[in-house]
Image (cartoon, rainbow, N blue to C red; front, side, top):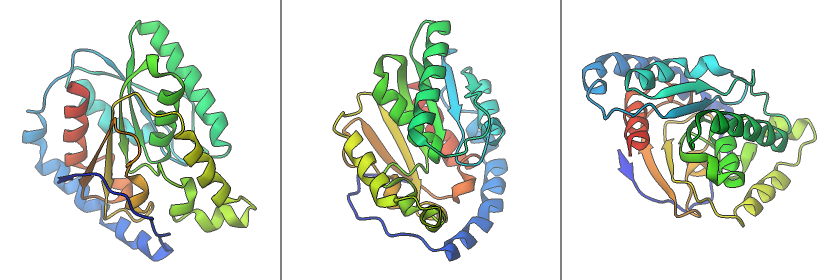
Length: 235
């Protein structure tokens, strides 16, 4: 586990990298073996934690992590917006922002956000727009550089006529408004879906980048990711 900032030009991964995702079974096995140590992680104080799913998934994908956070005395809730289709990302940022403000008004205090993949990017942008409503963010393998450009879906977007370079520039422009919310960004060099360099934030000083070792689809069951998430939310 390494904590550091990285400033590299991320390469575009090929479809062959998806083969590394077959090792997700190892992540599940490690989770079971790590159960005793997971139970010793710092507990929360009943603060609301909203989980945000990745592209093509819904709240079920992070249900195991929610159960763990509930055990640690957090109050996890799903985003409640169905499947994250990934189309028209600015519209998703707006919808998630409305949902976050709704929960913020309900509980009367800033909430925490934990987002996997695209969900982590959405969480960051909501916090950028509504910093008063978000206390802390944890991103799990989230492409905060380039959007789809540095993921295995890049060619699919191009085939649909989407200008991934234009999306990359739009994301870069968003950083003109710096993040004020503390972010813990987890990335993995075993990631077969998103280039790990694209998950590292070297622009916003409120971000702590931490390397873990799991498949992209393994972030939701990786014991190290769970531990780091628990520690970040307990601060």
